[in-house]
Structure formats: structure tokens, C-alpha cells
Length: 341
Image (cartoon, rainbow, N blue to C red; front, side):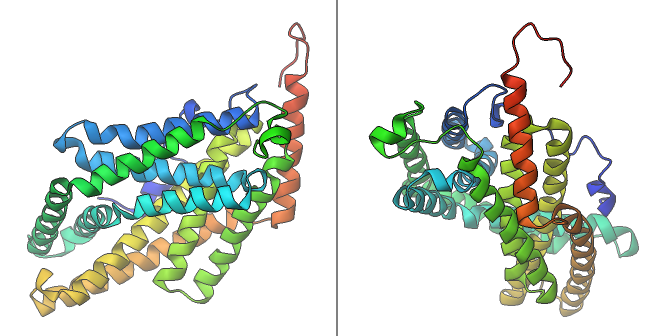
């Protein structure tokens, strides 16, 4: 049975961190951002060539890659011109939206299955099997339609490939900014405003979500938490013991808020299309169980959110500034220096 214990802070196996999405130990910031962004764009496009049986995974990977690149753009926004940032962010956002219906159709099937797993032992056998079957059929129809539309997936791949080639032209030399007007300097000031803004907006949106607990407000908070999570992954080398902990907690927070959002979408779908659950009694029972589950998820998310957003944005910026400087001191040590850091 799936329970909230799945998201325990002591669960080390929930997620793993790939060093490929992190800033290298001695890697300049601009080089690291460009490398990770290009690798993610390539990953996001390549999965669609793995065959129809891998279509769902390809959609998931492309959306995840897009979010990770958008989080990096936010992190170094101060080093990009407003024109460049706005164009790249909007381009990736629009690309992600191409597959939003596909993702949503799969997510509500999973959400309904979780409810069945959680409460099935207390219900009559097969209580929600018909609902899950109808949701699964709907998902399959949406996926087949997407596969048959050459403009949909072809458009996603084309957009990601074009972005890849644009990013490949980004200069990374230390003095490139003076010549091209574009270049990410290897200093903490290059990320401080982006990091503070991502954290600060997430903190504000958490407060708003609990003061005005609407689906939209929780979804906005979830997006900010996701961006911060990917930024923490990238910044792990600044102090792995601490930053990994933040990234893990943000990952768990994203799972909680993600399930809450999927359940909210599922309820909305059933309300708009009651034929998905024709029995009024079953529909009423399912809605009550989903409402209970969402309350549990939001409580668990508040616990993690209070930990992540405990300090003010200025304090977080200062703290990470010290982490950055300590990393630079370690990198400046002579190779034959014997020291633990």
C-alpha cells in the first residue's frame, strides 16, 4: 500500500543525483550551464526515437529536461540579456505545452490507481476498476492521436534541436561578454539574483497556497519548488553534504505537490465528464477519498516546505555566497596540499 511514508526524509533510495546535471568540481559556471543545458536538450529529443513502446518515457524525459533547462536559465538570468532570457524561456515553455495533455492523461491514471491502492482494502472488490479502465482507455486514445500527429512530436523534437544549436553557439570564454554582450561569468554574482528570486518566489507562493488553498496556488508553488530543486542539483558541489539534503527534500516536496495536483486534475475531469465514473455513489465516494488524500498530501508538503523555506531569501543568498567562496578557496589550493575539505 502506498502511504505518505513513501516520502519519508529518511528514505535514501527515493531519488539519485546524476553528476552529469551538476556543476563540475572545477568547472567554470558558464561552461557548466552550457554543458548541462545542451545535454538535457539532447536527452529530451532523443527519447522519441526509441520506438512507440517507449513513448510515455520519452514524453516524461522531454518534459523533465525542459524544466531543468528552464531552471538553469532562471539561475543565470542576470547574465543573459532580457531579450535572450525571455525568448529562450518562452520557447521552452511552449515546447513543453505541446505534450501537457499526454502527460496529464497518464498522470490521472496513476493518481486513480494510488487511491485504489490506498483505500482498496476498505472497499468492495473492484470498486474503482471501471473508473481506472476508462481513464486508461482515454490515455491510450490521447497517446495514439499524438503518435499519429506528425506535427506534435516532430515539433517537440524540432524545437529542442533548434535550442540545442542555439546554445552550442553561446560563448564561454572569460572575456566573451565584452565582445558578444553575452557570457556567463564565473562568479557568485552571476547566480545570486536568480537563486534568491527562485527561492523567494517559492516561499511567497507557499504562504499564498495555505492562505488561499486553490489548485492554481498549489500548482504555482509546485513549479517554483521544482525550479529550486533543479538549481540545487546543479549547485551540489558547493557543499554536497548540505545541498544534497536540500535537493532531496525538494524532490520529496515536488512528489507530494505533484500527486496533489494530479488528484485535483482527476477530480476536475470526473466533474466535467461524469461518464468516466457513471455511478453517482461511486463518484461521491471517490471524491471524498481524493479530498482526504489531498488534505494529507498538503499537510506533509507544509512540513517539508517550512523546512526548506525557513530562512529569508537574503539569508539564503548570503549563505550560498559563502559556499561559493569556500569552493573557490578549495580550488585554489596547490595540488600537493594535504587537506580535508
